[in-house]
Image (cartoon, rainbow over the protein chains, first blue to last red):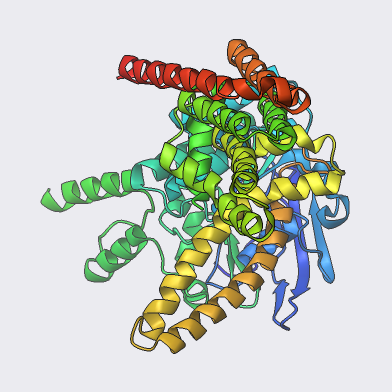
Length: 298
Length: 269
């Protein structure tokens, strides 16, 4: 897939009327040290109710991109809009519609107990205490951490802290969830649980989810579509996970190794011409291999 | 001072004193400090101190860290007394006043989560000051962890013990890094607050009492301390022969608290 596979990349490929919740076009940010991130190439668009993954090597500008979306950075050049407004200028208007988990969750937990921490945002927005309690209890049970409600955050494990931060992000039922490396520090079971939860939030509540990750194997399971950043911030590739992981040259240029299943099927195809087409999930892989085995043994 | 231990005990304690209202605890601590300030009788002052210790026993606060923490001011008070007190009794009174006030304050810290302490006094502080005090809460733990990491790294990378001067220099540089990190952390914490709904005034609800009887007992104890201190100050000539009464009474209270605490512990196990 080349960079222009979706020439109208500001519209959704399946639903041209889908609302663009986040739109970034050629935004530039120059840090004090002189390093510049220019989020250009393709436009970055996250449509309502979609799950979007952002991939890229270290230092490509993934976190810079998220900080623009969160209004923490203001582009010196280009356009960033969230819900149709520039977030850096009008953050207070849109912030209750956005939930966030930053990379360093330790710095995101503020209160003495898990319950109080998850309740932080609802209380800041002035909700009634009974409403706060209902929301917090629901968020904690959705993350499977209701038993941690009275625990002190600094004594939790890294994975537990990340779940608490995620509960704090979804407690206000935001329309847009922004997650920076959400799977870091999670054990496989927790990771699978969080993936299921994100899918449920997106499908059942129409939540738009934008996340950055180095966990390439999670992308096919999670994302409706993905963007790949090249060093310097160039938005090089956009597409469904299958489209993105077919684009080997762009992935190599961004120092991204394809998911292990994609590599396995590539290897099989290089050794056997009748090997199945690459698939990206374990379920699809099992089916494809079973079919192939049936075919070869027959 | 082990901040993490104090915080854990304050947050996870399940005693009636923990369940009492933070406002009550602060008010009673103020009464105890006032009593210590007013009294001129070292036995009355000791009685106030014993009352605080009895409350700490009832709260099942571990005695060693509690007394160690409350004992710090004794060092400075002793120096002051040594330099200025006319006799031993006056010196003992200076030290007793300092330790009594510290016992009351440390008891509040061991039984009330830090944000609750500041949520209570936030209303009388300027907004910026109240919020800044609150924001130090997590920063203390994050910086504490960072300092531990930096000191370990500095020791490992500078060859711990072999070159004490070099180790010391490396540790000082690590502390310099910590200062820079603290500035950076402050900015990031502010960003996080803004992302999570902060708009110029932190809203931290003051917890209500979950044990009204404990509130009543604490208030009664605080008032009794102040009344005794004032009485022995005003009518000291008449009451001097009875100075043994307040410490004797509070020793009985302390014994009762120990027995109650032991029974509660046994019941829990």
